[in-house]
Length: 152
Image 1 (cartoon, rainbow, N blue to C red):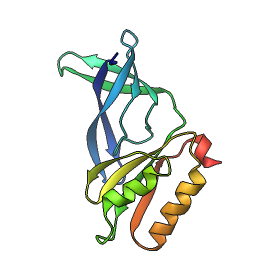
Image 2 (image 1 turned 90 degrees about the vertical axis):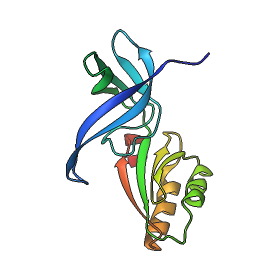
Image 3 (image 1 turned 135 degrees about the vertical axis):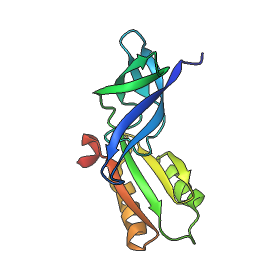
């Protein structure tokens, strides 16, 4: 049985880009009456949000969309943002390398992707590989959302 999903609009200020932004993210309906949803795809830019987080959103009839209100419960997953610096390295191969370590990712373009670190994946191994690639100037990365589990 396929579950019901909705696009949720997130409006926020990006300190990195120094501008007001909007991003839509797919979320599974958990409780439509309460406006509770579970984040399904990896956020590219939304701050402090990870896959599987439980959020509350409100449907705005005038705009015909759901808009984010608050995070209700964090999932324990983390989000890492990766920028490819060296064009000699294939982004597909970089993403496969991390997928083999248990981390899915979504590509924005050839030089940028966001990666999910599930709560049950050892982040020390992932961070070691990210740091190795950053030291070789292949990538630059940012720990956009680092859960309590992965901070230990």
